[in-house]
Image (cartoon, rainbow, N blue to C red; front, side, top):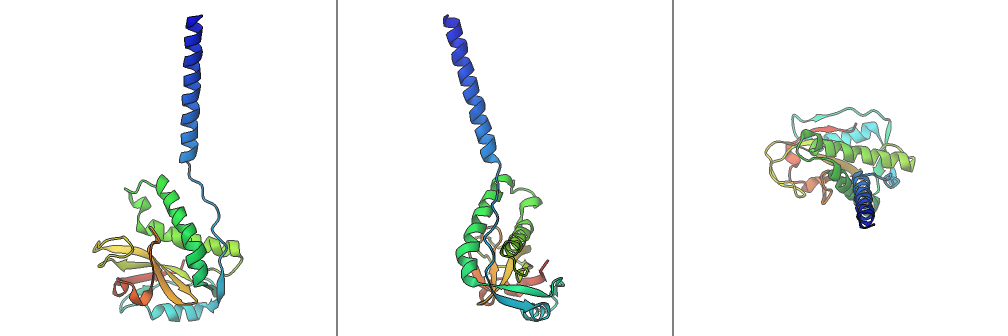
Length: 193
């Protein structure tokens, strides 16, 4: 009888350990909800968007082509109040599954994630693709928690109803008007797709 009781207690602990392990494994699988629907203030033609973006480029920098005819100009208030909080949470969730040690989870991957998440907001909002780009810069000054690297770095560039803004895609802690962006002179390449 004592032996059966020990077996029952042992079996109970084993089942409890298995269920805790399963719950931890399930909790470790990150899932993301759709981003908030994009709110725009209007649209801009591809030609006007290119002209505006070209003004941001230093000499010898390159601007990638546009594929659509019109792009959504993003409402600044929506960006700050709805999108950025969602994106910051999504980045933290993504970091739980990314190892952070390989080139598969560095600035260009987060830059792509930012651009695609904004694009998905446009899909959810049923509006034209957002006027948002990935920008390769030479990181000679720290910005938004990312220190001086003295190498290429990728950030996000977004056209809002208040003008162009730069966002660090690895944390979105700071949104800076492009005129005040610390590495503006280091812009090397802008791509919208």
